[in-house]
Length: 249
Image 1: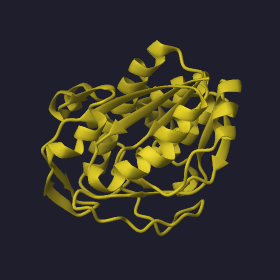
Image 2 (image 1 turned 90 degrees about the vertical axis):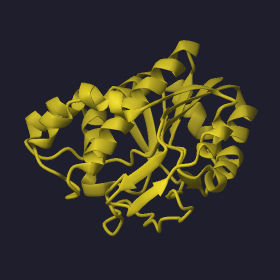
Image 3 (image 1 turned 180 degrees about the horizontal axis):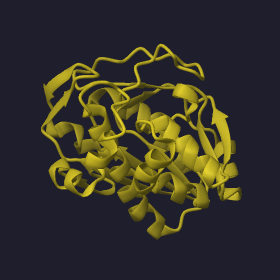
Image 4 (image 1 turned 30 degrees about the vertical axis):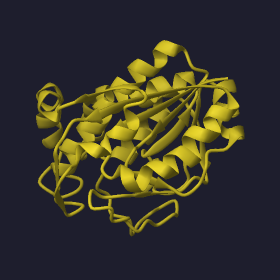
């Protein structure tokens, strides 16, 4: 198998997360086929997020473990003016934090799109999309990768944090067709809100595009916790509804 491991978003605290990434993602995947690792990250020196309570400097050291792989960093200032953020804000603020989480979601969706553009050039059989700011408690399983390689429409997502009936958007194993749909969400966000007439929500958006593309969705037991800039590990509710779990990115 040819496997693409694609990191997206922001590496908040790699001194805490990267060892779990190495043990639970990189090493198993490298043992099952030809592994290609890519990243697209936001280039920032500070993190401000009222939902998570973060307002801290972001050390360049957080990017260092990923520099061995193929990838790019991009400052958010050039991304947001090209996004439909202003139009999306007209539909409301799902997180109630002055649109900060909506802004972060636009950056995340851009990052997913860009890393997919890099990864698909190697024509992988299966894709793994992963956030770098998660502490991974479980390893990926070979059967999941083999299913994605065999079924182009397979979308395997963690079976928890299905907030408001959506699908967990922090991690995914995808077949080729599913990967393309997963990566195109930034283009679907505004049409989705116009159709549904309610605020954009990341998990609901993922479910909508999965349904629209008739993807074969399967929950997987992999668990991971968000790690903040300070190294604090967020308590997670590893249930499907995740009703007590803060919805912010």
